[in-house]
Amino acid sequence: MPKFQGGDAIDTAHCIALTHEILRCEEAFKDFEAIATRSIMVGENRALAFKMYNSYARFVHHLYEFMAGCFVREQHDTAAGSGKDATRFIGGYIRHHAQRILTGRREAILSGTAPAWENALSAYPKKVPVDFASDFRLYRNKVSGHVKHERATLSLSDFYERYHIYLYMFYRDALAFWGNRGSEVPDLKEITDFSVMIRQQPPRQA
Image 1 (tube, rainbow, N blue to C red):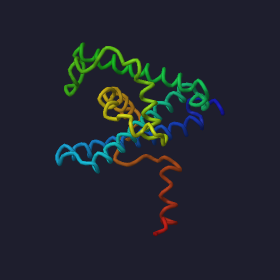
Image 2 (cartoon, rainbow, N blue to C red):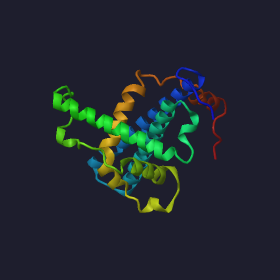
Image 3 (cartoon, helix red, strand yellow):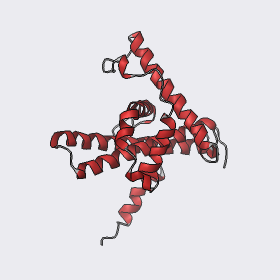
Image 4 (cartoon, helix red, strand yellow):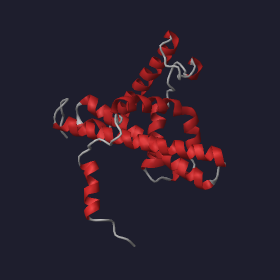
Protein backbone atom coordinates (compact mmCIF):
# COMPACT_ATOMS: atom_id res chain seq x y z
CA MET A 1 0.00 0.00 0.00
CA PRO A 2 1.58 3.30 -1.06
CA LYS A 3 2.32 6.39 0.91
CA PHE A 4 1.32 9.69 -0.65
CA GLN A 5 1.87 13.44 -0.43
CA GLY A 6 -0.59 16.30 -0.28
CA GLY A 7 -1.74 17.26 -3.76
CA ASP A 8 -0.50 14.16 -5.59
CA ALA A 9 -2.73 11.79 -7.56
CA ILE A 10 -3.55 9.50 -4.63
CA ASP A 11 -4.29 12.44 -2.35
CA THR A 12 -6.58 13.98 -4.98
CA ALA A 13 -8.47 10.71 -5.35
CA HIS A 14 -8.64 10.30 -1.57
CA CYS A 15 -10.13 13.80 -1.23
CA ILE A 16 -12.83 12.86 -3.76
CA ALA A 17 -13.63 9.80 -1.64
CA LEU A 18 -13.80 11.94 1.52
CA THR A 19 -16.13 14.42 -0.19
CA HIS A 20 -18.34 11.55 -1.33
CA GLU A 21 -18.45 10.09 2.17
CA ILE A 22 -19.43 13.34 3.91
CA LEU A 23 -22.13 13.92 1.28
CA ARG A 24 -23.46 10.42 1.97
CA CYS A 25 -23.39 11.29 5.65
CA GLU A 26 -25.34 14.49 4.96
CA GLU A 27 -27.90 12.59 2.91
CA ALA A 28 -28.40 10.08 5.73
CA PHE A 29 -28.77 12.81 8.34
CA LYS A 30 -31.29 14.73 6.27
CA ASP A 31 -33.29 11.53 5.84
CA PHE A 32 -33.13 11.00 9.60
CA GLU A 33 -34.29 14.57 10.29
CA ALA A 34 -37.22 14.24 7.91
CA ILE A 35 -38.36 10.91 9.32
CA ALA A 36 -37.94 12.07 12.93
CA THR A 37 -40.01 15.20 12.19
CA ARG A 38 -42.72 13.07 10.63
CA SER A 39 -42.66 10.75 13.63
CA ILE A 40 -43.21 13.68 15.98
CA MET A 41 -46.16 14.87 13.90
CA VAL A 42 -47.98 11.59 13.29
CA GLY A 43 -46.80 9.54 16.26
CA GLU A 44 -44.44 6.64 16.43
CA ASN A 45 -45.11 3.40 14.60
CA ARG A 46 -43.03 0.41 13.62
CA ALA A 47 -42.63 1.41 9.97
CA LEU A 48 -41.31 4.88 10.85
CA ALA A 49 -39.08 3.46 13.58
CA PHE A 50 -37.59 1.07 11.01
CA LYS A 51 -36.82 3.89 8.60
CA MET A 52 -35.53 6.17 11.35
CA TYR A 53 -33.17 3.47 12.63
CA ASN A 54 -31.86 2.80 9.13
CA SER A 55 -31.19 6.46 8.35
CA TYR A 56 -29.40 7.10 11.65
CA ALA A 57 -27.41 3.87 11.29
CA ARG A 58 -26.26 5.08 7.86
CA PHE A 59 -25.32 8.42 9.40
CA VAL A 60 -23.20 6.70 12.06
CA HIS A 61 -21.56 4.45 9.48
CA HIS A 62 -20.64 7.20 7.01
CA LEU A 63 -19.44 9.58 9.71
CA TYR A 64 -17.14 6.95 11.19
CA GLU A 65 -15.79 6.05 7.76
CA PHE A 66 -15.22 9.72 7.00
CA MET A 67 -13.22 10.16 10.22
CA ALA A 68 -11.19 7.02 9.47
CA GLY A 69 -10.51 8.41 5.99
CA CYS A 70 -9.35 11.71 7.48
CA PHE A 71 -6.92 9.79 9.69
CA VAL A 72 -5.50 8.03 6.62
CA ARG A 73 -5.01 11.36 4.89
CA GLU A 74 -3.31 12.86 7.93
CA GLN A 75 -0.88 9.93 7.96
CA HIS A 76 -0.27 10.18 4.18
CA ASP A 77 -0.38 6.41 4.08
CA THR A 78 -3.14 4.31 2.48
CA ALA A 79 -2.28 1.44 4.83
CA ALA A 80 -2.94 3.53 7.95
CA GLY A 81 -6.62 2.57 8.03
CA SER A 82 -5.98 -1.18 8.19
CA GLY A 83 -3.87 -3.59 10.19
CA LYS A 84 -3.79 -4.68 13.80
CA ASP A 85 -3.10 -1.22 15.24
CA ALA A 86 -5.49 0.75 13.02
CA THR A 87 -8.46 0.54 15.41
CA ARG A 88 -6.42 1.95 18.28
CA PHE A 89 -4.90 4.74 16.20
CA ILE A 90 -8.22 5.75 14.62
CA GLY A 91 -9.84 5.70 18.06
CA GLY A 92 -7.17 8.07 19.37
CA TYR A 93 -7.66 10.33 16.37
CA ILE A 94 -11.43 10.44 16.94
CA ARG A 95 -11.06 11.16 20.66
CA HIS A 96 -8.56 13.94 19.99
CA HIS A 97 -10.73 15.67 17.40
CA ALA A 98 -13.90 15.31 19.42
CA GLN A 99 -12.17 16.98 22.36
CA ARG A 100 -10.75 19.71 20.12
CA ILE A 101 -14.18 20.59 18.74
CA LEU A 102 -15.82 20.37 22.17
CA THR A 103 -13.19 22.64 23.75
CA GLY A 104 -13.58 25.10 20.87
CA ARG A 105 -17.35 25.24 21.39
CA ARG A 106 -16.97 25.86 25.11
CA GLU A 107 -14.30 28.55 24.65
CA ALA A 108 -16.40 30.37 22.06
CA ILE A 109 -19.37 30.44 24.43
CA LEU A 110 -17.23 31.63 27.34
CA SER A 111 -15.59 34.38 25.26
CA GLY A 112 -18.90 35.57 23.78
CA THR A 113 -17.84 34.80 20.21
CA ALA A 114 -20.24 31.89 19.66
CA PRO A 115 -23.05 32.39 17.11
CA ALA A 116 -26.49 33.33 18.42
CA TRP A 117 -27.88 29.85 17.67
CA GLU A 118 -25.28 28.11 19.83
CA ASN A 119 -26.38 26.05 22.82
CA ALA A 120 -25.77 27.15 26.40
CA LEU A 121 -22.47 26.19 28.03
CA SER A 122 -24.30 23.63 30.16
CA ALA A 123 -25.03 21.61 27.02
CA TYR A 124 -21.34 20.80 26.61
CA PRO A 125 -19.39 18.76 29.18
CA LYS A 126 -15.72 19.56 29.67
CA LYS A 127 -14.51 16.16 28.55
CA VAL A 128 -15.55 13.70 25.86
CA PRO A 129 -16.60 10.38 27.45
CA VAL A 130 -13.78 7.86 27.67
CA ASP A 131 -15.75 5.21 25.77
CA PHE A 132 -16.95 7.47 22.98
CA ALA A 133 -14.54 6.36 20.25
CA SER A 134 -14.81 2.65 21.04
CA ASP A 135 -18.62 2.82 21.23
CA PHE A 136 -18.70 4.81 17.98
CA ARG A 137 -16.82 1.99 16.26
CA LEU A 138 -18.91 -0.71 17.94
CA TYR A 139 -22.19 0.80 16.78
CA ARG A 140 -20.85 1.49 13.30
CA ASN A 141 -19.97 -2.19 13.07
CA LYS A 142 -23.15 -3.64 14.56
CA VAL A 143 -25.99 -1.36 13.43
CA SER A 144 -24.80 -0.88 9.86
CA GLY A 145 -21.51 -2.51 8.95
CA HIS A 146 -21.85 -6.20 9.83
CA VAL A 147 -24.79 -8.57 10.15
CA LYS A 148 -24.38 -9.82 13.73
CA HIS A 149 -26.83 -11.10 16.32
CA GLU A 150 -25.94 -8.19 18.62
CA ARG A 151 -27.85 -5.82 16.36
CA ALA A 152 -31.15 -7.10 17.80
CA THR A 153 -30.16 -6.18 21.38
CA LEU A 154 -27.87 -3.16 20.92
CA SER A 155 -29.80 0.02 21.68
CA LEU A 156 -29.28 2.73 19.09
CA SER A 157 -31.59 4.91 21.19
CA ASP A 158 -29.13 4.70 24.09
CA PHE A 159 -26.22 5.50 21.77
CA TYR A 160 -28.10 8.52 20.44
CA GLU A 161 -28.83 9.81 23.94
CA ARG A 162 -25.23 9.48 25.10
CA TYR A 163 -23.28 10.48 22.01
CA HIS A 164 -25.34 12.34 19.44
CA ILE A 165 -24.00 15.71 20.62
CA TYR A 166 -20.45 14.62 19.70
CA LEU A 167 -21.44 13.08 16.39
CA TYR A 168 -23.31 16.23 15.44
CA MET A 169 -20.25 18.34 16.26
CA PHE A 170 -18.13 16.13 14.01
CA TYR A 171 -20.74 16.32 11.29
CA ARG A 172 -21.09 20.12 11.30
CA ASP A 173 -17.32 20.62 11.50
CA ALA A 174 -16.70 18.24 8.57
CA LEU A 175 -19.55 19.61 6.48
CA ALA A 176 -18.21 23.16 6.80
CA PHE A 177 -14.96 22.14 5.10
CA TRP A 178 -15.82 19.13 2.95
CA GLY A 179 -19.49 19.67 2.16
CA ASN A 180 -21.06 20.86 -1.06
CA ARG A 181 -20.64 24.63 -1.46
CA GLY A 182 -23.10 25.05 -4.32
CA SER A 183 -26.40 23.76 -5.54
CA GLU A 184 -24.76 21.23 -7.85
CA VAL A 185 -23.24 17.95 -6.72
CA PRO A 186 -19.48 18.22 -7.39
CA ASP A 187 -17.69 16.16 -10.02
CA LEU A 188 -16.73 12.99 -8.18
CA LYS A 189 -15.21 11.22 -11.21
CA GLU A 190 -16.36 7.60 -11.47
CA ILE A 191 -18.87 8.13 -8.65
CA THR A 192 -20.93 10.69 -10.55
CA ASP A 193 -20.12 9.10 -13.92
CA PHE A 194 -22.06 6.02 -12.83
CA SER A 195 -25.31 7.57 -14.10
CA VAL A 196 -23.93 7.54 -17.66
CA MET A 197 -23.78 3.74 -17.57
CA ILE A 198 -27.27 3.49 -16.10
CA ARG A 199 -28.71 5.63 -18.88
CA GLN A 200 -27.07 3.39 -21.45
CA GLN A 201 -28.02 0.15 -19.68
CA PRO A 202 -31.13 0.60 -17.49
CA PRO A 203 -31.73 -1.93 -14.72
CA ARG A 204 -33.65 -4.95 -15.90
CA GLN A 205 -37.26 -5.03 -14.87
CA ALA A 206 -38.60 -8.13 -13.15
